[in-house]
Image (cartoon, rainbow, N blue to C red):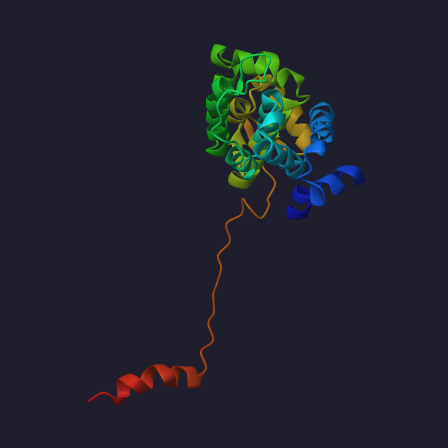
Length: 238
C-alpha cells in the first residue's frame, strides 16, 4: 500500500525522474501540471507528483495557478482516510493576491468548503458529505471543477466502501445507499460488482482483517536472572 502510494504503477519514467530527481526545478512545473490533468481525465492518482507542484508554487509564487491547486485538493479528497489532503494543505502559504492573475483567486472561497468536505469524509459522515456537496453552496465547486474530474463521485463512493469494509460485517441497504448517495434500488447492482452478498434488506460484508475481532493472547517470558534484579534491591532493605 505504501509503495503504491509513493510510486504508483501508472507513473511514467519521465514523471518519476521529475519527482525523485528534479522536483525543485521550476521549469518542470508545466509537465507536472499536465500530468495532474491527465490524472483527472484518466482516473489515476499520484500524490507525490501533485505535492511536487505545490512545493514549486511555494518556492516560486509567480508560478501559482489556483485552478491547479483546487484540482490537487479534489484529487486528494479521494484518498481519505490517507493523509494526502492535509499534506497538501500544509504546503499552501498564507499568500496575498497574486498581481499576475487575470481573474480573482477562487481558492480563498473554495478552500473552506473543501476542508469541510474532507472533514465529513474523514469522520465517515458520508450522508452529510453528499448533502453539502449537492447543495447550492457547492455549486461553484461542482460546475467548475469536479465536473471535469472523471469518476469523482465513484471515487468518493470508494472512500465510503473502504470505511464500510473496515467497520461492518453487515449493513442495511438503506444505510449503505445513504453512504453511497445512490437510490436504494441501485444498491444490489453496486453490491454485486463488489462481490458481496445480500440477505433481504441486509448486505453482508466479507470477512477481512479490519472487520474481524479476534482475541489476542500476550505471553511474556521473564527469566529468573531478570526477576532477581527486581527482587534483590527490595530484599536488601531492612
